[in-house]
Length: 127
Ligand SMILES: [Fe+2]
Image (cartoon, rainbow, N blue to C red; front, side, top):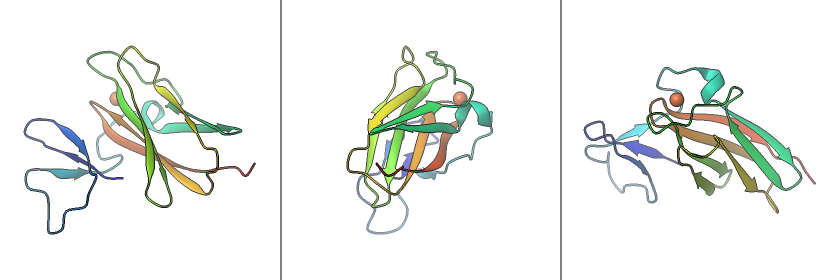
């Protein structure tokens, strides 16, 4: 999963198709952890309960206000596919995902509108 940002206007994009040549003009790739922020409020905390993957941001709940909130949480699988939950400020900073028929390692990302992209790794438990 790749996230790009326009530093001029602040818009953030998920990449669906890789560019066939060079960089994407005017956009830069956002890397996890590149913005200073409290680790305990941004690094996703992942638990598995049967088929359910529970992702909380973070070990201390991240604020959810219109000025500062978690925009989205993604779970990326080893084959590059991913599932996403978009959040709004009136929601809790967490998401639940169904992992039925899934296995292996996942990378869990979250995007904070002020502190950017954060991630953690998790190995799905066999059922
Ligand atoms: Fe934040």
